[in-house]
Length: 157
Image 1 (cartoon, rainbow, N blue to C red):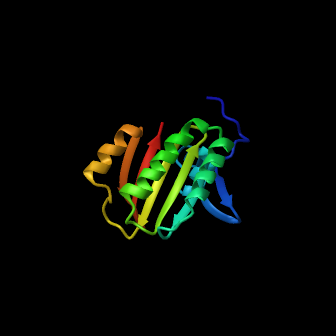
Image 2: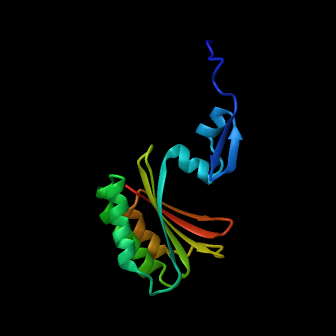
Image 3: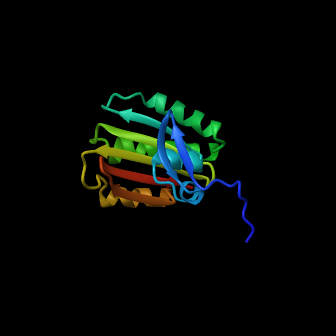
């Protein structure tokens, strides 16, 4: 096997002056651990909104979503994302405030997802009827506890 003696054996990932991760090139590029490293390696783009009450700026979310989809060339996903956000915020999760809404797009894989995170919640806020309504609209519905609360992730096709 021919190896390049100039190839690095150890890599550091730094962001804003902080070392987030260090390891072999394989560890960093194929199995990153820290979320900042994953975002960098996979070119994950994200749009985040904190929704504290029922009088949040829905127009701002709609405008931001459209700009995000245009910027990352995923305009075909904008209508589906907008419809899912509306359904989640006004129907399935209307009584859960505050919550964090995050739209992510992974450029390398083309995967687009909506995350709805409710802090200090230990189980899913979705009912069986909500799941039945959402599943036909998404590629995947993921419900998972986190260290901060509970997250619902909707993978958009």
